[in-house]
Length: 367
Image 1: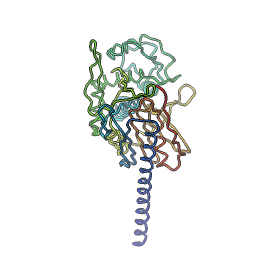
Image 2: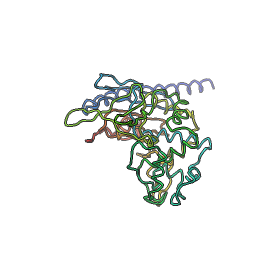
Image 3: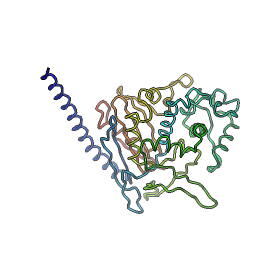
Image 4: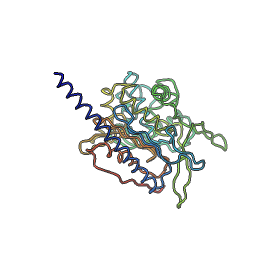
């Protein structure tokens, strides 16, 4: 019996050591890959995290957060993560569902009693999966959320809820308004109190941009990276305007350290059990007669060689996040290149997950 136990210990130790050695080799390969692509594509700055089963396999930073000040990217540099904000909103919704504050099958009219008749079949699940039929709003970027919601309720739906699907911001805005009413807090505070603070995410924030007369006012966000794009061979700084009423869908600034904490917390079941969340994060409903393009809580879903993974990108390549449930990995890439397409996280995954085919082509588009 002693010999059997000893043999099992040796096998387990050998397996663990091999896994650690393999990951260390992958870490070095990823460094070389990223540095080569950054040089070739003139990417100013990046930050990368690889998490496996609640442990940090790799958290690395590269290049410059701010070219004017020659400020390097650090683990606490806050990048504009654009639509990756939706992952944090989705996390908040999952927490609310788990605590039975709200359900995907709830009708929106339960929380918005003045909703028009056309919205009578609209459910929370339609808002989070971009199948609501709510049209975009193209008015004043600085209106209060309630005013925008009234304008949307006065307009017609693009299609009956659950019968079509298009990627939009204002279904998420409507969901955010409902969550604000449910918790009696503005969304930025709600996200901080219910997600960021419990997970120890101390870097990120919304900058709360607001036009005041002839000038723009923003909150201070520490170590905020500048975003750049190439204009006729010359780098230009730019800032995308995120109306505060769309903060559920985009606009959050996050560091790689904070996003790593988020991934670790999902692995360690800090906010809710993985067994509860799995069917929401990786499960699909039907939209009309077709499978949904997004999971039950709004994540993009992919499958390659029977490897399933889900996540989101934003910017399109300012943020790029993929979680692999079976393999236990999460890959997170943040950048301040406003023309980068979201291929880095998937490319990096191929260095660690042998079942995935290599996909190392990284491209940019002309903004």
